[in-house]
Length: 168
Image 1 (cartoon, rainbow, N blue to C red):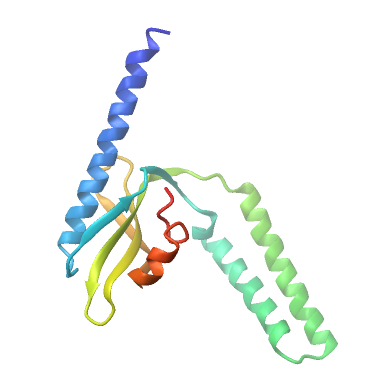
Image 2 (image 1 turned 45 degrees about the horizontal axis):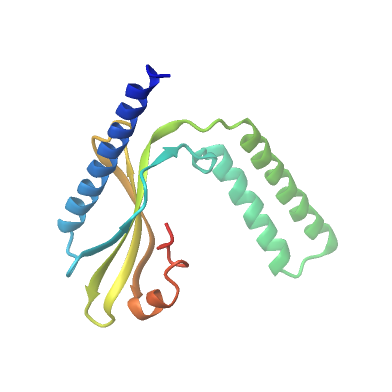
């Protein structure tokens, strides 16, 4: 048991260091953007990021066919045979999606951290923004950012902060 203690401590220290690097990188990145009066509100913990089945081209194609076929037969007045054909096409494409999902094994690709900050908008005043930032495996660079919401008026935000992601 005593032999595991240094390993656990080193692991925690490395994780804390990676969190510090992620926060510093995000702040630096945002300070290089034309953001008026950037003020950080919250950072999530650093979390693992994995590949997604939704990034597989075959899955994307089958999902698009299933979605469009379903939309088409639900929104158009079709003859029964035509509707049956579109339903069959949607079901078949959904079966392909289900098969791909069942066989898919996610792979660790790096790290991610969410960040909520406020900024000043010319018409809206103070607004809240939430993004997820993705990092490579070695925490050497930011590889992607994804907006959750942007320029949400603070009066709306303050009413239900948990709904907007401040319940970490």
